[in-house]
Length: 273
Image 1 (tube, rainbow, N blue to C red):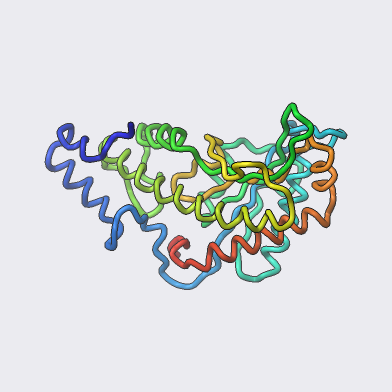
Image 2 (cartoon, rainbow, N blue to C red):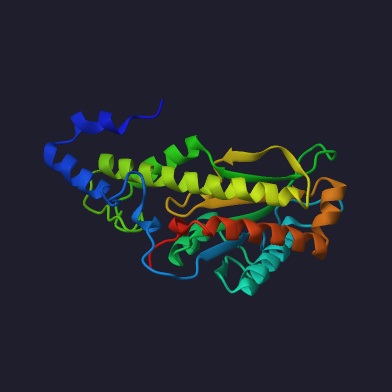
């Protein structure tokens, strides 16, 4: 069972608790709404597109020998181009070529550019070649709890959360704040995933229970809504052929652009300037 923040009270002196609760008040409306969600003026949302794998890491090797790192890069470039063409977004690619990036580097890059949304693109593989279809992952509850605990242990916590300085907070208060932020971030990730899946379904098959949950490192930014999109199974001949098709990758990008537009029609999903 998750610890209830109210149970931390006996372990904090009154001054620490009041300091922590003051920090919790970073939203005047209601908790948990992070300061990073409160817009200060019109601007273009920043969308970070992450092409999975790269360099010495090929990812999945497909039914006919295609490499996941190549498929994801082509799909990411297509999505980048379509988002840029709308003129509505600031779009960032974590990699533009066959470069290796560590998983934590990808998250750090997204945070460095103040990303409003992180989309990691992948292609799955399984031992059964008859299984095909796309899916979208968001961060699991267990992984989120572990990440909150790990972040709270960091010695330098001044920049862990956008808009909230944790440098002088106790680990208990820091963990509460991080947990609250991650809950809101996970909710926003789920909102985007729930809008993305029906758009993808217009152009490609989905696996059963297509909104899935896992502890992928690239989903662990505490303050950036993040999804990992499995565009299909390279272990399935039909999915592999589709993902090799520029026309199909274009349709996946179109679906994603529509979902991004719907997501950002909710203005509260922007970071501050």
